[in-house]
Image 1 (cartoon, one colour):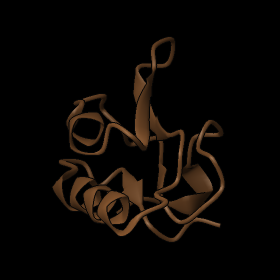
Image 2 (cartoon, rainbow, N blue to C red):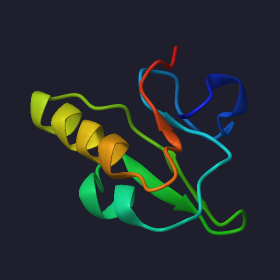
Image 3 (cartoon, rainbow, N blue to C red):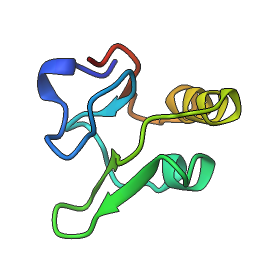
Length: 77
């Protein structure tokens, strides 16, 4: 389960975030490309835009549920 205290600083404020358990598998970026992107230097994903529509929220939730290492959280600030 993602830990808010371990989230990457690149995450924009809001409900969804990625923490330091990310293994750079690309699932979230493929599932919700409007919201997740990659830090090329660090080799991990982060939320660059919080969802603004119900469709984006659903896709972010799908990414959260599909994350193989549970690095995506939905209790952000």
